[in-house]
Image (cartoon, rainbow, N blue to C red):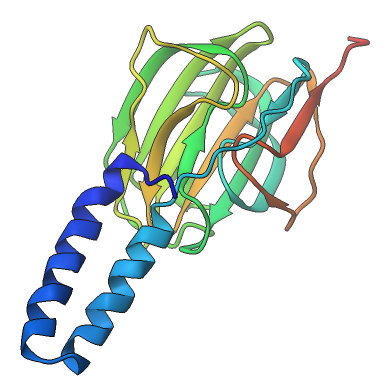
Length: 210
C-alpha cells in the first residue's frame, strides 16, 4: 500500500509507542496498535484512473459534495464562478489532486479558526491554503480548508509549477474540506451529498457551445 509522505512521522511515533508498551504488557499495547493501523489506513495514497477527456474537471478530493453554488470570488478570481465544496471525513483518502492540466500562479496560506469543516463559514474563517492555477479554460481556485480535527493542510505545489490532471499537490491531515471555484463555462456534473474520489470522479464538464 502506498503511503503519503506526510504520514510517516505519525506512523513511526505510534508504532514506537506500541512496541515499547508491548514490552511491558500486550494488553497495554492494543490501543496504540489500533492507532498505528489507523494511521496507515488514513495516510494511504492509492493510484487513481485519471479520465482521458480533456474537457472535464476531476475532483480534487475524496469525500461528499456539500455545496454547489454560484458565487462571486473577490480575492483571487474577481469574477462570478461556481463553487463546489467537498467534505472529507477521517475515513476518506486525504491526498489532494489538481482537476486538470494547469500552471500554478500562487499559493497563499491564511491563518484562521478551526470550525467544523461542514459549516458554511468555515470556507472563509478557517485556516486554509489557496492554490490559484491557470488553465486553458481560465483561472481556477482550489482551497484546502482545515477543520475542527484537521489542524494542518499541506500544499506541495509552488508558484511556477506545471501540473498534470490528477497529479497530487497536497494533503490535509484528518477530517477537512476542499473548495474549488471554477469558471461558469463549466456545468457541474455532480449532486449534493454525492460521494466523489480525487483524480477519478468527474465534477464538471466544459460547455462546448459557449
